[in-house]
Image 1 (cartoon, rainbow, N blue to C red):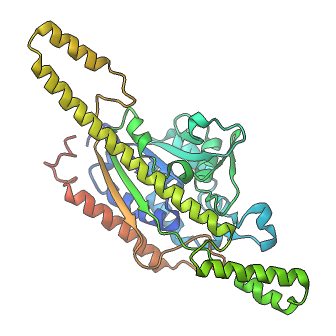
Image 2 (tube, rainbow, N blue to C red; image 1 turned 120 degrees about the horizontal axis):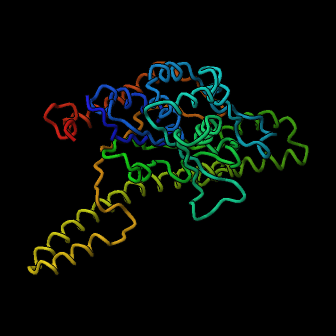
Image 3 (cartoon, rainbow, N blue to C red; image 1 turned 90 degrees about the vertical axis):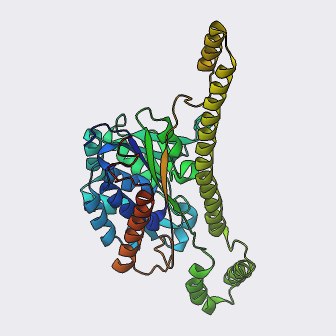
Length: 380
């Protein structure tokens, strides 16, 4: 076994569907020769929770927890009169995690002693946020107190289109997907990481539409002669008409659409930037070699080589970090949190998602012969 921990694992956000697939991905990764080499796990949103359990090698506990999990234990719908004050849903997941795992702080305390480092990303909503930091909060199990790390994991998974933010130390934080849904750049920047293995969930977002307003309409119809009630029913009619035209039915629907655009865009940008850096590094190496071959004078050659070495690029020019990315997406009906009339999540549907994550990881790792004794990744 190679004792060097030079592999970084990157886990994107992805809600309930994403975290189920991540379990399968991580289970397949644990069967590979790369598992003992994992030194750091980077996670955002649902990836922060699955990453915490993976860093402790507690995948069985995570799977058992998810198999028991039901919609009302994650994001419980608020009564309609509370919406202007507390958002669409109550954030029930922290208490659910505390009840199941005996407190998230205890998990965080374990993480501070674990061989594998956990890095969690959240979005900074504090009034005094510094724009130059990109409104991003990054917490490492190596440097963050356990109580704060526990809150960071919960804040990263707090879907802000549904629930209010969470306080982490002196910051106000929420879903990390707004700023970095796929924290690939942090893996590139980590000095110990020489190989990246990542799971990127490709989300399909449900439309909120007007379904949640139908029960309210039914209850209010008997009072439709009262002017304020009649006006409110008219607003519901207008919302239905907007939905029929493919427009946001209401403010909540628009926020979910904006979240979809933001998250998809920053996720795509993460890989695009990484690919651009890789290409720049390859071109820089090729340019350096070609220029030095043109210089015959030894002193001039040494001066040119020194100038290349002194070039101050905004990336680490001495190393290219290879990456293996498994991309998961939904096929058929998935498990969605945040719907007001939520059907229960079946064990069959959960197992199918976990199995899909395993199969996607297996296809990617097998295609590049990760577990082959003569393959490139065993000898890396």
